[in-house]
Image 1: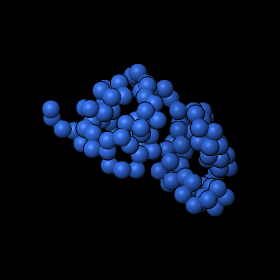
Image 2: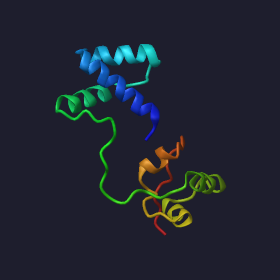
Image 3: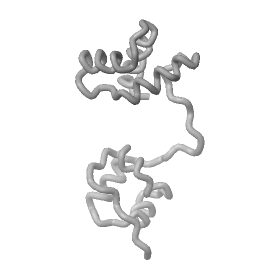
Image 4: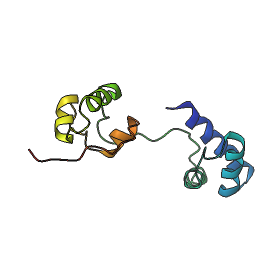
Length: 119
């Protein structure tokens, strides 16, 4: 888990315990940590969680097998052929979940994800 996420969640919990509302909390955190550090919806989500009695700062485990994909392998494959289809890309990197948009977000790929082409 990213330590910055934990720190922001800890700040959100701190302001929740102090009785600030979500909007005031977001403004205060963004003033201290820099504009855009935390969104209104994120603060509202965590306030709901804390209000329900869950004071944990970690994400709950997600169902399913975690994606085992190397960002460097994905980026290298895309660099060698930017017009590769998702099917070809999934064979190249050895993952059947390559066409999922989160894969490209996780790898911090700014360009549009490859489109699906039939063979």
